[in-house]
Image (cartoon, rainbow, N blue to C red; front, side, top):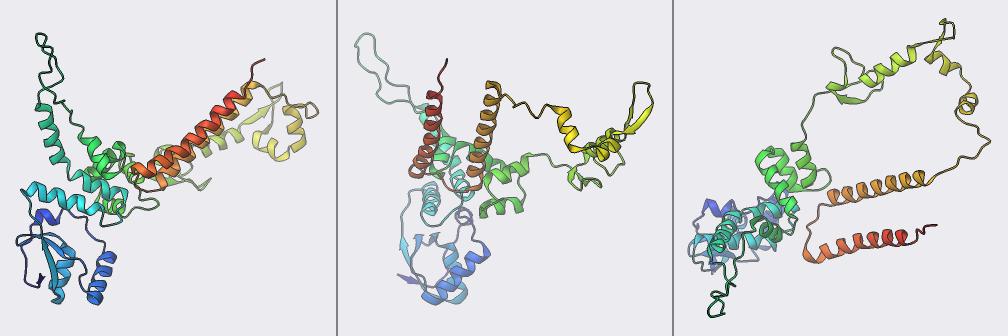
Length: 330
């Protein structure tokens, strides 16, 4: 059925849908002006359920549109349908998917509460030996359910909740946009890391927290301590000042300094402790690189691609196990 007349809009339904960016809205408007509304708007009687942006554009330009009626038993069922329908309609960022799924939290929590009320079955009557109730209690795992719907980890859901609660409008919008520097982890750390006043050191030129400067000084503590160390006088066995450390370094011969550290003609003997320390450094760098990859790639983890990611990590684990097997004791 083609329509052009106004429909009833419920604010609670409209706010369930992630808002379009100005660019996305403009792109949608241009497409509708060019090709019309290709998909029918979903209604529940005279109440608009899905297609609020398309409806707004049609009203603005007097464009007709088709509708399809869908019956719901309650407002809650309609809201659930609106939210779940969005997951298959748009290319949502990890934050947007989590944001949508979190809107189901009151419904899921209520369902979990009802499940907890169910009598704990699988108990045997001692006299008859029969089960009294075959219904098992399913404890409420609301956070796990939300994470599963969004296709993210439970930790991500927790971080998104913090961003929603404590983030500024600008930070929330950046999280919705996603991309480098705007991932859930990046915004979360911005919010949870205590901000500090910074100053630029006149000596090294680096910007550092204000508490790394002595009061009233524009040279950082590290540089100032180094200046003091270099200016410290060097005395001979009689106690007479011969030079400063700064003078000694300026006038020193590089080869003589190296020779004073160790005998360059004698090969350095590396020990098993050195090997273990090097391996620990490599492992630490590897773990850091993996963490950075996970943070930078703002992708939605699904059951399918999650298996691929785990498989990649399992290959690394297998390689390490092989190396461990190659270590033989004498």
